[in-house]
Amino acid sequence: MKNKNNKMAYIIIAIILVIATVGAIVYYAYQETRKYVVASENKYNMAFYELVDYVQNVETYLAKALISTTPEHGAETLTNVWREASVAQSCLSQLPINSHELENTSKFLNQVSDYSYSLSRKNIAGERLSQEDLKNIKELHTYSLELENTLNQLSTDLNNGRIKWGELKDEGTKVFATQVSSITKDSFSNLEENFHEYSGLIYDGAFSEHITSAEKKGLTGEEIDEEKAKEIVKKFYGEDKIEKIDSNGYSENAEIPSFDFSVKMKENDNIATISVSKKGGHVIFANYNRTVNVETISQERANEIAKDFLNKHGYINMKETYYYKQNGIVTINYAYMQNSANNQQVIIYPDLIKVKVALDDGSVLGIETSGYLNSHTTRNLPTNIITKEKAKEVLNKDLQIESENLAIIPTKWNTEVFCWEFKGKVEDNEFLVYINAETGKEEDILVIVNTADGTLTH
Image 1 (cartoon, rainbow, N blue to C red):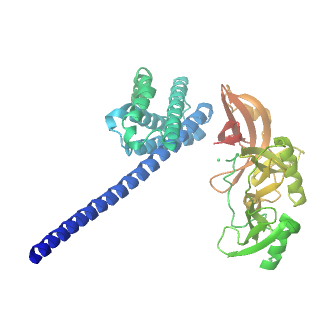
Image 2 (cartoon, helix red, strand yellow; image 1 turned 45 degrees about the vertical axis):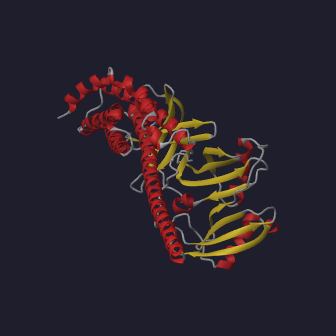
Image 3 (cartoon, rainbow, N blue to C red; image 1 turned 90 degrees about the vertical axis):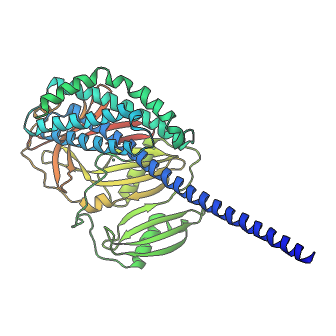
């Protein structure tokens, strides 16, 4: 009987071990599957959001191509369309949707890429675009805007959990199919004929991606030590408002070497961060986030407060350019103003400063001065420039001009160009067009985006 009981116990133990082993294998398999699913989800998310960005870029560059008047600038803009559309198509191919189900969308991006490439070759050869070319670009821009809106809606649905990637195989294709079905009816056949003809091709304001300079022209003054930097921090925030200052060390390899601090305020538990340059003791960056429950001051009043703040800290002759408002806090971009030889005001866009103001009590929560510290100096402005009227001759004839200024703008080659700046509209789109004040060449075009929260440019 005892042996029988022992045998039964062994069997039970064996069964338990088998169950435990199987359970462990199943759990391991589940975990590995889960890791695979998560990795796949991350891959699809990255591809999708990159697709959204690239389609937005396609739409922006097509809008610029519509009002570009010189072959040189047109070639650059259309080459950007070609590149962005090509990458967008690559991102689209990575989504977990059968290719034939998104054939129209893929075809659209492919033809945008091919057509813009053929037109850019035409511009590079020194030819201007014909009215038929511009008509086709306008149609492509309309469709790209529709596609962008569709992607933005899908993005919202994904973020809110209304659509999962598995469901996107069904739901997403329906949305895409509905959106792009009309594209292939008429316009593609016209575009394909044109291919044979040519087959033989910044929440920020204008120039916020400013150039950096090895010289740091605006970084003036003698070198300071950490104790001096700490005194500058006390003066910046007001010593009576500070509970404690902790050093975060010296950033020797930063773009502008700086002493960095964390600052605990007396009024709440929020921590401010601030960086002070070793050379000259300039505040490069300061940020203090807190909740703003109710807005009691206007955008205009916030601008007055920020201007007073800049003046008190030695940043004079600064003009507000663009702003962005979020969660009761407004960030305003300021550019330096300099008088020309004939006493005209010139906007110096590389000398940029950003100021954050809380709209409940008007307190300044942050500042960023790296653009100004990199670039600020008194420019020797050219005197032999073309007239405003001569510059207007280069503009697209459909541009309804709203304002004009002289401006210095940075280029991607780390240089600066003296330009006539024209702000205007073509139909419902707003633009900034920059004409070289010395040569009359079209230098740059920016698309203005007006939102409920502020004004941005692309």
